[in-house]
Image (cartoon, rainbow, N blue to C red; front, side):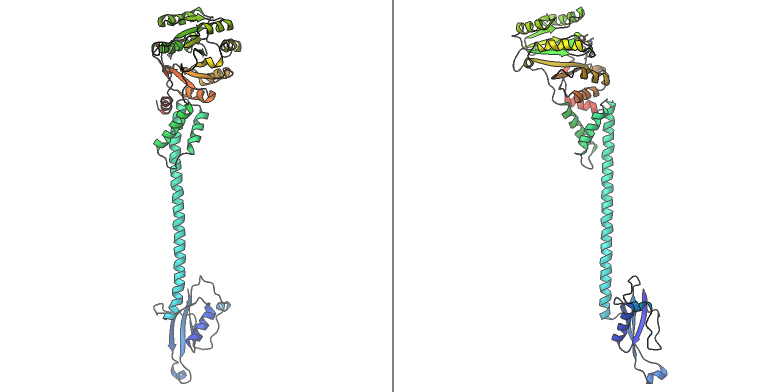
Length: 395
Ligand SMILES: Nc1nc2c(ncn2[C@@H]2O[C@H](COP(=O)(O)OP(=O)(O)OP(=O)(O)O)[C@@H](O)[C@H]2O)c(=O)[nH]1
Ligand SMILES: [Mg+2]
């Protein structure tokens, strides 16, 4: 703040002087009349002294301000500090309050901007906090999926699909239920044998050696025979091992089900006629190395003897097989279209990740799961909800 005094014959002249020097924004702080003292009293009229001030932050409008104009009066005192306690005249007070108002407005504006900035910052912070909380929950669930042997590729796929649908500050429960629902959807509706429509249905069981094809046939056949009172027959093309035929014959005898051994396509066509008035015919096949294409072709040839709309194919896989091997197995069967997936030996593994992975890889519908050697009890239709819960559950 620069404060200066200006003397002139009249108040107006003094103010003009002040404004000339300090600029039009100069504020008049005080006005007083100065009577000449002593000898001068006789010759001079009283003077008017105006004390004016300017905020030094406001640049001088008038160039003259830099070099103060010399007053014509010898007794003018420059740069004398004025007393701020002296009251300003009402007229000039108006100017000062206008500036004050401007300053207040500016201050309000700044404060508002600061508050807005802070709010944005807080908002951002909250969002980041919420997002990182979401991320922590997602990370936990992701780890759980990996522990349950879900392939990283599919775990990432699930996470990226639900991430976009989450609210910024979802609860752990919300995230968990989104992932759960996503898994259930991906597992899809299981496809199981139904006797609706055209009968008989020829149900082929194919798959690697020792996974439980014959045992699974016995379990399913028993349910149809006992619970649905269906007319059931057995066919086996597993002519490589006497023990294999005998194994199925034992079940056939217990359940009172006819059994026929088929060696070639002709015999297969023959059997189709023979069992024409049956509801369902289960066809057991020899466990074949998925590496042997000729063995697979044999089975495919037999299957083709039955029209597509009369047959169903079930690829039997053991849940205990390493994922990498399951991938090779399913690749080997990829030419065989329209198969369903059965998973056996779920009692021998604590994780159902493979079941999910293979479903994702092949896009083939899931059907049955077996969980023990007991015929007929240890089998059930795959329940996607139960699998999803197992995939998300810790051990
Ligand atoms: N723990 C357990 N064992 C099972 C299950 N299903 C079948 N098994 C056993 O697995 C072994 C092989 O079963 P099979 O039914 O002969 O298997 P397969 O696929 O017909 O075998 P091949 O005809 O030789 O290819 C038997 O000891 C069965 O009792 C299951 O769900 N859990
Ligand atoms: Mg068998």
